[in-house]
Image (cartoon, rainbow, N blue to C red; front, side):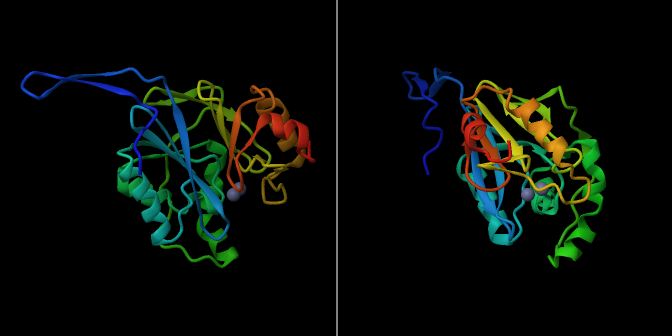
Length: 240
Ligand SMILES: [Zn+2]
Ligand SMILES: [Zn+2]
């Protein structure tokens, strides 16, 4: 696998052959790697930039093989996970929170209104008939909509996009023109609102107010299904 091909790096070699210094002349980039996992076909997202730091968003890896795919992508690309974020806490988005917490020593960050969902995880697994091998960790910090989080050279704005669940958030990188929407907005669809705490009118309002106010060219990484853009959804999404 190629590593950071966008990052042109000048290596100054001293007369004795030792590397004397490096000057990164590349432009900034932030990219998302999507790994589709678990019986719900959930998109686990790894957001990384040219510094090699990354954040893991909604790690839903269910099987040992899926967790190994996540670990291998990070290892082979020389990435350093620095934050563990959840857009929301439905079971399909939290299966590997424990794995990420234990493997890279990261505290889970969620919106406070998602904590009750996190605590219902064992019950919901039982309801769906999905056995689990580890409980997700308790949240270490709460995400504050309107504020932002950082990693590497990247800033992610926290957008409050409830409706699919009470405390759903989206993560928007203005510089990269990318938004991770969890289950709020999908390619030509929206999240279901018939689960506990769901609210259809609130979801439509979230999308119109928070997501459709982003630049049209913004690339949308949803919690399920293909990548899309704000422009495409404004034009073709039948729910909006
Ligand atoms: Zn969900
Ligand atoms: Zn989901």
